[in-house]
Amino acid sequence: MAVVWVKLLRTAAIVAVLGLLYLLAIEKHAERDSLREAPVELTAACEEKLQAYALSAGEVYRSPYLHKTTGRVSDLSGYSEADVRAIQRGCNIVDDTQGQLAKQGARERWNATRFSRSTHTSCDHCHQNLGDKQDSAGNRIVGSNGLGASWVMADMYDRFTGLLLPYEMRQMQCFINSSNGFKPNAADDLLRDITAYSRFLSAALDLKMGHRYPEQGMEEIPASATLRRGDDYVRGAHLYREKCAACHGVQGFGTVVDGRVLYPALAGPESFSLDSRMHFGRVNTVMAGFICRNMPLGQEGSLENQDCRDIAYYISTLPRPAGDRQGPLVAAWQQLMMGVMPPLTRYAESLGRSGTPHAIP
Ligand code: HEC
Ligand code: HEC
Image 1 (cartoon, protein in one colour):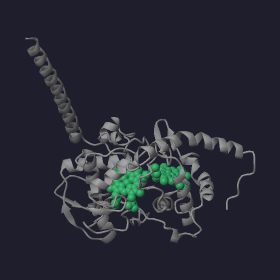
Image 2 (image 1 turned 120 degrees about the vertical axis):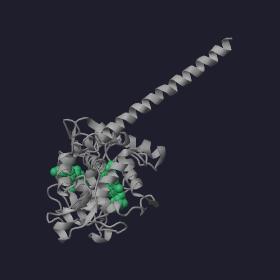
Image 3 (image 1 turned 90 degrees about the vertical axis):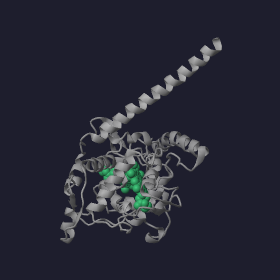
Image 4 (image 1 turned 30 degrees about the horizontal axis):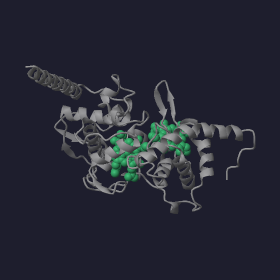
């Protein structure tokens, strides 16, 4: 008799647990549905961008950019209300991945932070001007890592992983490594909305599927484009102190004021990982390209190629999280370095202060 009761109780316990999980799933489902239906409150930058590209629901879409740049008008099939909301959410995520500007916090960004260990990352930091960087005349900029130009590449050989990857998978790489986080599901609303936004950019900019445009990817600075005297750590460190430390911090840990990230970390636990495409195991061509194009903020273009290589080399030696391919030993080592190096550097600096400063070569 007792055996029967034990069996019954066990079954009841299992049913109860499954029932609770089911209720939880329904609850989450309802939350996602309500988010999908809710009107989207745009960040200021997205408001401006999407308005400039005349995003609205309707039968046809006409790109004002195309008209302005070529005088042509082209009628593309338009967007439903749901499409518009997806594009708007996608833009918000790119601008504010951490949900710092959202009224209801990270939830409004599909809780993108669950895929990011870094509390600093926003896609827009590296895919600048919301993945659509242009000069003052409205020309798209070579090697500016544009998201529209990336979307039209669809399946693309990815030199970082050595695989042919669709757009969603290339996004994932950035979640895993540039935000030192985790891989979102390929069907996650988060990726879908960023994809919807990127696709909209390609329509607004009149980019054709399968074409490679110059703004796709980051412009690189190979050694051949420098003075060919090698990457100089000491010179890089000096230049970093002089040109970058005021914003990104002496240790490269970034600047956070009142919980808002003003300047993102370039090193340390909040930074991109060793495998980030910005860093990629110390391949200094990519980060150097970014720096020369986009930094120091407000004085873009003021650095020489050699300067950017030297600074990128210096930054690449600072401690940061291990990437997803490097295994537990490297991860433990990097963790240790992130703890040990900052106080050591501070100590070394306090010694240096009394003597004459090094001359900048
Ligand atoms: C720390 C800088 C950084 C951050 C933050 C970042 N990315 Fe990237 N991303 C890169 C770099 C660098 C590349 C590689 C560019 C190249 O191939 O030359 C890249 C590549 C990509 C690509 C593939 C581009 C292509 O044409 O192959 C996609 C898609 C992408 N990122 C999406 C995102 C999304 C979405 C986010 C926000 C979650 C994000 N990135 C955050 C630096 C960054
Ligand atoms: C006036 C402040 C300021 C200065 C000076 C500055 N930066 Fe930045 N940096 C920023 C901001 C803000 C961002 C985020 C992107 C944006 O808003 O343009 C950023 C982003 C970056 C990124 C993208 C990485 C990430 O983790 O998101 C790199 C790399 C970078 N800066 C390097 C440098 C280097 C190297 C220098 C010195 C040559 C420099 N910065 C000088 C403000 C600054």
